Image (cartoon, rainbow, N blue to C red; front, side):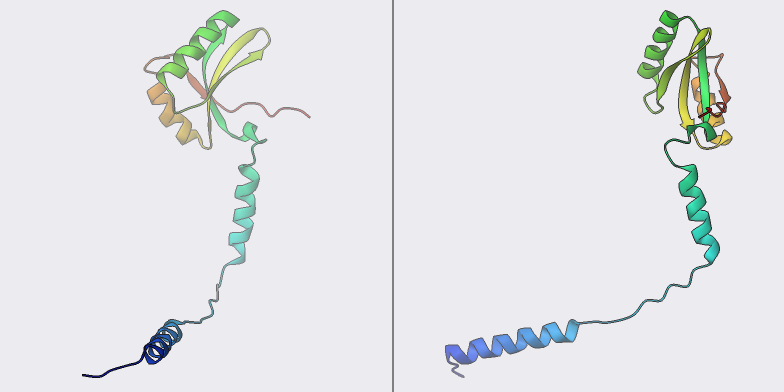
Length: 132
């Protein structure tokens, strides 16, 4: 039987820990080759997705008429469809209920299929750009 002193055991443990740490260390360099057009596309996408540019997106109108009925329709919509935002908008002389903020016409049309089940007069549109 081999007998080790406490000092020798500690020294041996430290050597093994040090060797293990050194043997697992890895170094390397990563080079990314990217087409310059990707940066341009990302800048364009960021420009489109800025919150203030809602006028570039599609919405669905589910109601146009008096204020009290608009509030009823808005409440009914929020109760039935929680996945899309809805708001009441005033455009002289009517209150309108607009739904969603869809990036593409296709996205709006897909939502329209579901929405028309309860709001048959709904239609998609692209809001006019607001003048500054």
